[in-house]
Amino acid sequence: MSRVRSHDFTVLWIGQTISELGNRMSVFVLPIAAWQVSHSSIATALAGASAMAGDVLALLPGGILADRLNGRRLMRWASAIGGIAFGSLVVAGILGHLTVPHLIAVGLIGGACAGFFAPSESAAIRAVVPTEQLPSALSQNQAREHVASLLGGPLGGLLIAITRWLPFAADAISYAVSWVMLGRLRTDLTPPQRERTRARDELREGFTFVWKRPFFRVLMVWAALANLVLNALFFVALLRLIQSGFRPSTIGLAEAAAGVAGIIGAMAAPWLIRRFATGRLTITLGWSSLPLSIPLIWFNNPAAYILAVGGTLLLNPAGNAGIGAYRMHVTPLELQGRVVAASRFVATIVMPLAPIGAGLLLSGLGGPMAITVLLVATAATALVVTLPKDVRAVPRPDQWAQANTDGSVPVQASRTSSSETENAPSTVNAVPPVEPNTVDGMPAAVAAVNKAST
Image (cartoon, rainbow, N blue to C red):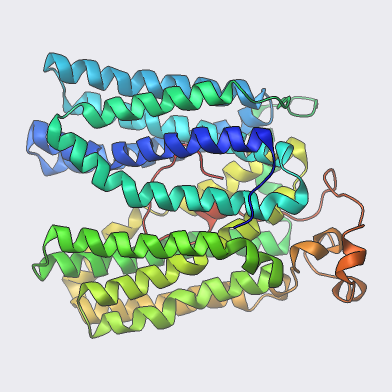
């Protein structure tokens, strides 16, 4: 993986890597702590869902604010509020007054901080990273998230085994580190000046910008469907492992092995993005989970689970980073926050339905038939992104500057040599098409709320 040479991106990346790890620990232990306090399955579920709910609720206002206010200040406020919220759990834990409502409230606040943070971070990356290095920058972010996902659960489990409030203390410290690192950013992250209108009209502008462009309209629909279907598929596979009596440690190792595939994929992502057309890479990602998940019909064991989830995560970082970089490249600076928020909102709002649908299918049809139905749905979902020519037309990064505003590529651009495209004029302030936020706009095997998702 080629490293991005930018002081501000490095500062941002280090701070958010530490913060991401703390976040993953908290997301993992919140439902565990709720169970320890209440022994109620409903309370446990509410605590587990609180972070995602807060994230979704804050995304749209977060996108509006990202295009209005200084991004550095907005991100620091989000980090400060998150740190104070999780610090309150530490105080309550030490005093022996930890309650379920407190856990749920902090989960909501932490998720809301993520929702406010993400659009501003996306705009910040676009401001501090040169266009040609955007794929590498987002690939590094993908690696960050997969490492945090791999380590967050085990570390959170280890800390909560020592004492109930310790993982929340670690997360509060990670928020503080993020706050300090954000203070070292040198670039002025104030968005371009524009006439302010009503929040509803500004939000509509972001959705309209995406929806009027065929390529990104297709990706927005596909992202929501893929997130729903794939998460349901892997949740069914996970439930079957649990029902079959596999030890939690064995299932945890299977999750870790699949996570390693994601890290490998993130390391290979810049190479893949440079050599393959972004549209074709997106289509390949759409189909990648299908062949490797077919064995789940007949084999209910950790090896089949690793093959299915790991195979999907192997290519996911390249798809996420490639389309994410393309979005940043072609989105006007004054729309970065709202486009990210609109795309991520549509992609994630359906995800809470995935475990519900998985449970209904598994109880009603049984394991093999539930897997079969979801595999058919996966194929249908892949067709959504395969058939439109607007997806197939998106070229490699060295040809993005020649892409038409409708998402297609002129014949001349497709024949342009790499030496010519390197000298192509910059399109930072152009208004070509935009695509869904790809960290949440692409299918993910494990859904979690991140403090800084680009």
